[in-house]
Length: 178
Ligand SMILES: [Fe+2]
Image (tube, rainbow, N blue to C red; front, side, top):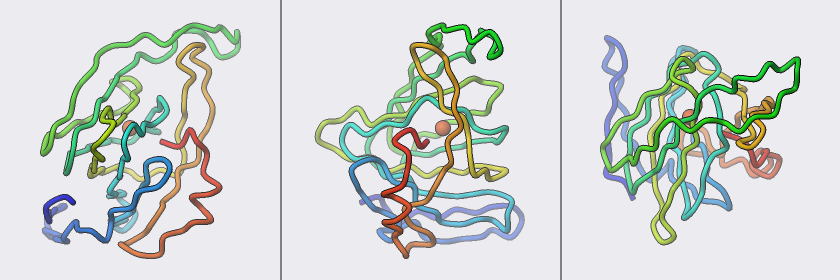
């Protein structure tokens, strides 16, 4: 369980505890919406079970900031595929760097910095991270590591505002959701 944390956004110093209401585990990592920022951002808590990871994805022209609240995550960054989509070139994505994110560490990415995959490398410990996406987005692109092929992925929430776990959404979710 992460410690209760507070966040503030903009001049109004919005404050809200991040607590157990946002912590859900399932067969893959869960995305739990904390605040929509009047349409300016999405703040969410992501809960990563042992070994859970995302697909390689972009960030739909948004800024993404994430902070570790519990456990560790491994981030692997990749360059954008070089082949033209029209030519349907197949080329493995080039790995740029690997970073380990420890508790309280912060990571930033946007599309100009490349793509990434995030995973919980632990076989015994879950991990929890706080993510801010601005502007918010409802879909992004995911990439095949071997071919660089891109596909569109709708992003969904397992819970909203600390309640209303939506099993229907979760069950329908693509395994390549970010
Ligand atoms: Fe990401």
